[in-house]
Image 1 (cartoon, rainbow, N blue to C red):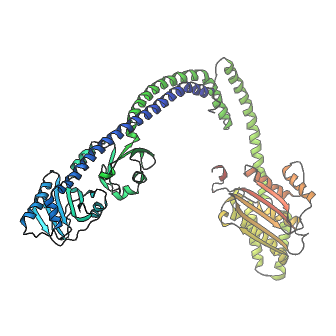
Image 2 (cartoon, rainbow, N blue to C red):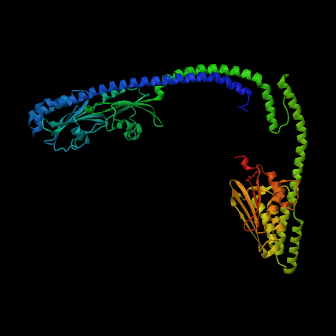
Image 3 (cartoon, rainbow, N blue to C red):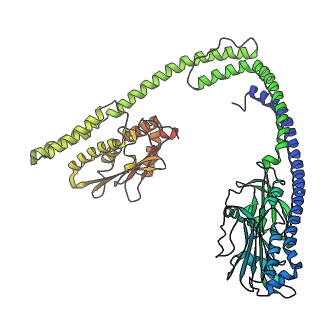
Length: 604
């Protein structure tokens, strides 16, 4: 309807003329703006990271210089090379002076440690206690190994809680975050290790420098060492182990470039990641900044919103004008089309008086007259067809072969006279079931199991009649035993065997009834072991099933064929053929019908 409607075509044409150029303009403007903003933002942030890196390098150089100054004090190094006793007040005074000088050089320095490798002494100085000497200390900590193995004998440990550096000194550890600078003291010009020097510093300056590099709440910033340990992060609530598992984090650590950026667009992060590295000689720290596209393109989106707002107002005006024109021109056509649809739905009434005096109005007048004539003809023919079908169904349901009833009653009487056994009661019961099932005309569709029980009663009577000369089997799929099927479709097929195939059989008569589900359909197969029919006769029966004019003895087959054609749409399968082993097969296949008696294939 939409594709062929004049009104919709007119609306669509006018909208396309307006929307496509304006939409293309918005798209191109947005694309160009976003690319420009992205390039500009990346350049500005790389410059910002470079400036932050310079400030950080300057600060690290200060820390390096601070620990190197002790090399200018020969008395201090003499103390490290010699086993001085604590009673040597001059030597101890020199050491304490060096430690206290370093301690008060910067207000952010919390404590200072000196470890003498020669005599295993740990000397500690802090702003909350006096200088304390601990003896026989075995130092522990990978940070000392890092300092000794680094090129400049310096290692800056990432932010951590303040700790004690010996196992016997009882200075309490706490939650105060500090950055530790560890220097390995070497006997210059030799390469002998004299001891270690550690300074715990509040990370205030690093935090201050880091916070100048990003906008809190919009961007993320991380300061890492080369091993991926977090020195500072804008989102410190996330465990470091979780960061290490994220692909973007590891890709930055593995990247050998000094600085650059990467773009990510996945479930993890959508935006730009910019990074820069501190000089290797100063620790090789990595500055990483993450900027989401939402922040990056914020300006472009504002411009786009303005353009879209203007476009919507223009579009509303176009739509109003288009609707006015299209309704004015196409309203009579729509009325005529609506009435045609009513007729397609089976509602033959016409609900308009006049469509005007032009060509469309004349067409509507002729259409109305034609529908009235067709309606009268359809009513007459429809009522006649309904009446004929109802009569036909009642006749089909009440059909019971007189010859069969005669032979059955004769068998019952003979058996009663000869044997005087209770089997008479059984036979009469079976016969009453058959007659009662056929007499009830109110049921047009019955459960398959009910139809099967009726067929079983019929073949059981035949079994009593022919005794050992007849055998039968039923194979019914339990999944479909309560599916609805037309009433009285099995007995005519079984009766067809006794009328045409039983007397010409070879050996014991056999009959097989199979009911199963095949691709959402019920399949019924009735197979006997008669001699079958000739190919010429088989073709004649097939034509007889379809052609009303051809007369044939196989009225039972035709009755079943006509009934399933009435009950089911889509040409249900009715197939007859000879069996290779000898005999005849009738095969039915039709859609499964639910409890309401409706074809389920039309509701899926």
